Amino acid sequence: MGFFLATGLGTGASAQTAPAPACPALLQQEFPRLQDDAPQNLCQYAGKVVLVVNTASYCGFTSQYEALEALYAKYQSKGLVVLGFPSNDFGKQEPGSSKEIADFCFNTYGVKFPMFAKSAVVGATRNAMYEALFQATKSPPRWNFHKYLIDRNGKVAATYPSNVPPDNVNVVTAIEKALAQKS
Image (cartoon, rainbow, N blue to C red; front, top):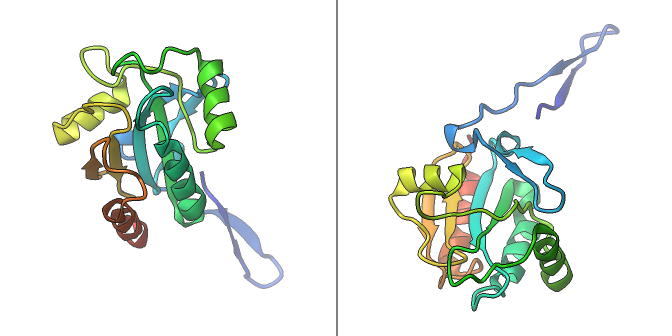
């Protein structure tokens, strides 16, 4: 995603496209969007701070959707994106279809951050993002709502277990620090 930089060179002003940030290996992936299965290339988030979370609709931590959406709303304009990956891996707490999950997230918690189709996040069948996160951290999710913070350069900056809410001071401080750094 480039932007146009106008250069005022006398009367013959022209527009040049500034280069998009290079896409780090961790984001060189594509997943179907939850709402409609439209393929989404994660390179569109290159240069942003990314909080990746595996989610479930029927979990004791499901109320974290509210704090995740609040973080997204507060920091989106500064470069934060939250990416939700629904999974039925833990306690079978995400049994629904994509439509059911999407409706639940939006109608119950007003979720507007990007969500992807339900997939595995642990084990031999985990999706490519979670395989890459595991390779980078050797720390797989142990339950729903495990969080990975990725800096603007595509490096994992921190991981947070399920019982650490997204609005925890340590999480918010790490997000603000990552947002302050330039890629």
